[in-house]
Structure formats: structure tokens, C-alpha cells
Image (cartoon, rainbow, N blue to C red):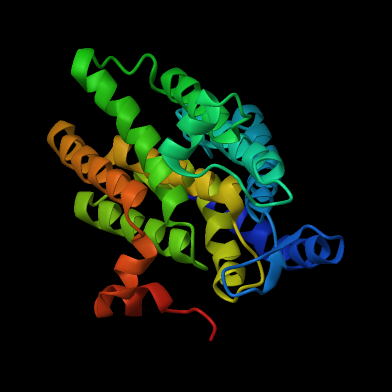
Length: 279
């Protein structure tokens, strides 16, 4: 197995990301960020496009030339990663009205459904569950282990959506998680399996940090899916349960409290969160 997916996808993103994001802003595909700056949105669509452009030649060569460029398990996980990105795109496109009165959080979406309102968040939740169930089918896990796999995948994806409130935060958390798991387990397996998606994430981070683009739910979902898959394939059973406990706690905390305010209140977290960001 090789890191061809990571290298090729990063190269593709390096060539096209800047022009594409500039064109998005020029054509009105933009939104104001937390500081009122108008940035390209949703940059997550660029992540998907770059990954698929890189995948095209690699998939052909992997099959026809027998070069072993892609991990066979990519077929399983790509369905989940691309699927939740599509659900995020639906949320980005349809989930915000003119008055910006979109229901937020589990409680907000539950109230919206109960009152008969349209909730893209509910569609995203059900769709993500279906995709996660499909992706984890056939892994051989039974009973609680199966439920734990589903929960870890879904809640990690949702957690990264909750984190996506400041430029570059999602990407930095993902890179830290990816590096920690690869070094801790002394393996490059997540990069070999998911490199086709990781390359564009690394490149687009340079633009989100400089407040030239915003991932949107499209990108946050994709990165969260990568994080969830990385946890599943890297951690053993005990480690998976520990990770699930942490992810559950952070999801509940993010539902009732502001993660951004908490980060701002801790000097070390505030410094790490602002690292690389423009003033």
C-alpha cells in the first residue's frame, strides 16, 4: 500500500483550490463569517471535488495496472465520507432561511419537527445513520460493539460540526487527532486508507485559516467523517470505548454550552485555537 492518494489529492488541491475559491466569491457563493468577513462558502464542496478528481486516475490505475494504489476498504468508507458531505451540502443550501432562523442543535431540530417545520438537520441525522449502518455492515461486530461503532462514527462526525465555528479549527483538531493516532499506534494506515480525502483538507486549511473560505456543513461533515473512520480503524475495542465516552461527553457539552466560549476561557486552548489564524 502507498500514500499515492494523499500525494495526488494534495497536488490537485494545490493547483485548483485558490482559483476555485476566488471564483466562488466572485459568483456569489460566499457568506459572512463570525467577524463579518465575506468568504467563499461552502469550501467543503472543493474538498469533495478535489478528492474525486484525484480518485479518477488512481482508481483506473489501481484496477487496470494492478499498482495497489488504493486500499480496498476505501470502497466501504468512501460511501460514508461522501454521503455525509452531501448531507452537509443539503444543509448548507437549504438549511438557512432569509431570517437566519434555522433550528440548531438536537433540541432545536426536535422542536422543529414537532411543530411541523422542515428540518435539514433531521434529514442529516437520519441520512448519516443510514450511511453509517451501511459502512459498518459486515465488520463482524455484534451487539454492543456494533452499536458502539455506529455511535462513535456518527457522534464524531457531529462533534466536528459543532467545532466548526472558527476558521481552521476543524482542520487543526483533525490533524492533531490523526497525528496522535498514527504516532501512538505507529501506523500510517489512516493516511493510506483516507489520503484521497486528507490531501485536500490540508490544502483548504490554508485558506480557511486566512479567512478566505468557510468549510460549511459540507466540509465539517467530511472532516468529521474522516475523524470517525480514523478512530474506528486505529483503536482497539477498549480504546474505542474510551473514545466513545469522550465523544459523547463533548457532544452533550456542545449541546448545552458554548465550546467557543470554553476555548476562549482557557489560555492554552485559546492560543492553540488561534494558531495560524489571521488577525
